[in-house]
Figure 1 (cartoon, helix red, strand yellow):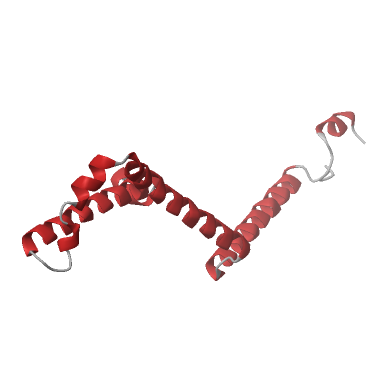
Figure 2: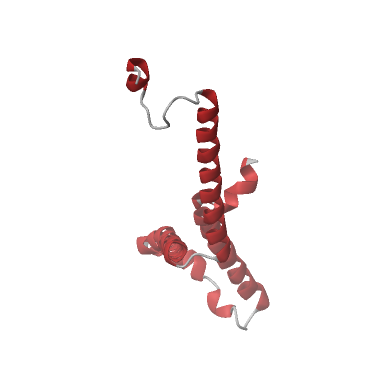
Length: 130
């Protein structure tokens, strides 16, 4: 269904990364507050300060994941176009073989239905005759 595909869409990746970012900032701050002096103590109060003082932080939260996703998609498109995998090569070969097979069966069906007609004869030529 729809919900099983959402994580693999632009919406899922973009908003999912933003939610993941917020969630772990909050978790790191809570670990620092409850754990006392230690590795995460430097993060105590940073989240509230960061989100309430500057607009650039909100813009970075919005545009950095989108820029990273665009960079990733461009790299994958370049890689698929110029360095395809063996699977992609075989899929393309199979698609060409299936198209040729369909084309061949259509021509064979046309010859069986009207054996006197030249294969490249147009409708106008058929009505005029030889």
